Length: 255
Image (cartoon, rainbow, N blue to C red; front, side, top):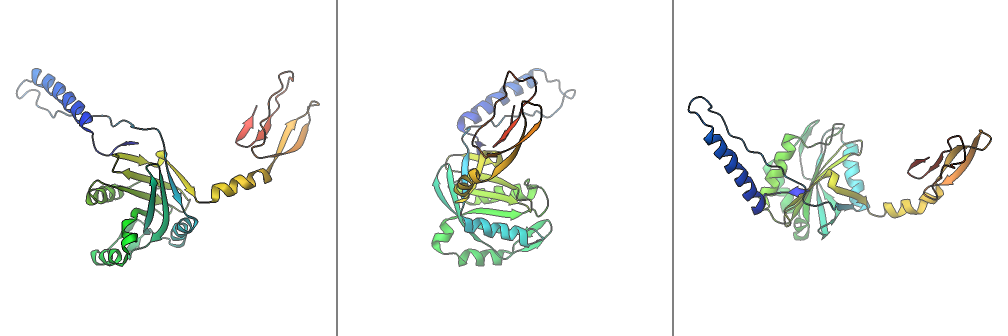
């Protein structure tokens, strides 16, 4: 999580750093002998640790998966979003604009884009805060074109509100870039938790019913077959035993 724009304090620190470095360069300057460019860099540090949640309704998530799976080219789409609060956003529907695609690019014509936006209701236009596209079978990292598009959109909406960008591929990998403009914070993939509405509750219900086969040494040094429900217990190694004894529970091996 980083600031989208430098704060006044960060600008002051950068200016002071530049001034001190520039002064030193001038003190050491010898005309026509040490001509060079003076460069000053600043670190954009993390400003928060708390993650944000993007929640998809099942209908919206299935539509996006269908777009990625059906087309063997790139494909782009928009999403309608309810902002629940600063840390929770719900994507509840998907809209597709006429586009011209190939294996590595999505283009739209101005007339088609205008027609698309004019077709939206006032409520849909108000909640259109999401763009995504597929990278087919390639990495979901943002390209230079993707980054420029994000910059153009953010500048166009006037540094207020919020906007979410995502890149998907057929491996179901997702990269996320969320701009919380009102709070001047940028979140990327590592800062975002993704949830499909209802699915987490379903997994919690069925997890105890899915049991993993467990093998362990018994006291006679033989393999013993057991069944253990996911997440129900963790085994412990008996200190008095001279051999290694492993129990497999939810989340990995415990020695």
